[in-house]
Length: 385
Ligand code: NAD
Ligand code: ZN
Image: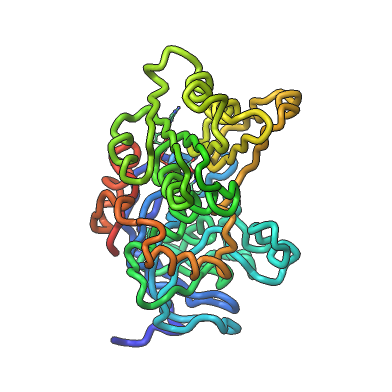
């Protein structure tokens, strides 16, 4: 095959031109990677609810079009820019939307995975070094090339994408790349929240609000840690069946309950669960999740992305009862330094990835894949590029 290093690549990408408009398969130009950047050939990408929220343009301040969305993927390094020393052409990699530069104050601090330079930033649309995009599209009338914006440091709905090397993790070449796609966001976010953030203990009780891939990854993480009761809450009864294979022991559908959810959960757990996880992005549900934990030590982790400007639905005095609350990005994992080991643990079967991929489609069927998530049919639909 002809070498593409240093050249502009023209390839297919699913471009979104306006909020909620169908994705259009376009020929885009992808520039070579610059200093400390990497160009990847994406082989698999899947759809997370965060893509769905960005596609709909739920948060107006974060809208930017035309844009290439997508952040959960796996691929192979096509070429590297100057100064990239930890990866080479042909390496198997996964993109991370929450990068790790390794040099900033936060990367050097053991208590956070938020990188000051390449941490998750939904407002970011261009590369850090020069404020420009690496994607462009030739106007239909043959006029000037128009920039196409980046998304979440990654933009994986494209056959080739350029990322800052801080947002690319090299993984074992033996790892099954299709399944490793899940580690790029959903599974790491959920399992990491149970392990790194809540530190779920053997024999403990857990309540998970929202049983998408993220919520069910929390369940899988809690199951692996030996939790004794894992209560799953969802308005979609279909999630109950699949949830059983990921460790959910009890189900509650809030729509046919007839009493506040937290009362029901406190009843069946003698005062409340040890840990609760909000995996939806709904302030009312967040309040229920908080009140479902046990007084004195209960701990709530927020994973859902809240796209409304609403503030926390809690009175300060409610915190005096000793319940704790925190939010978590990417399950607290420092991507570059900790994900390769997590990938190995998944390969050993500590976490079972098999049930998370519920659908697979060719890349050009991306609009159908979004519909599956909108309708609550899929956990993850993996697109083959
Ligand atoms: P998903 O759409 O697959 O799952 C959401 C689930 O919540 C669905 O099963 C839905 O039926 C359920 N639900 C919706 N409203 C409900 C309600 N009122 N009560 C009970 N259940 C309800 O989404 P996902 O991909 O699993 O993502 C979940 C959330 O996590 C999203 O907000 C996403 O943006 C966020 N997320 C956060 C991070 C992070 O780093 N913190 C990473 C990935 C995703
Ligand atoms: Zn995601």
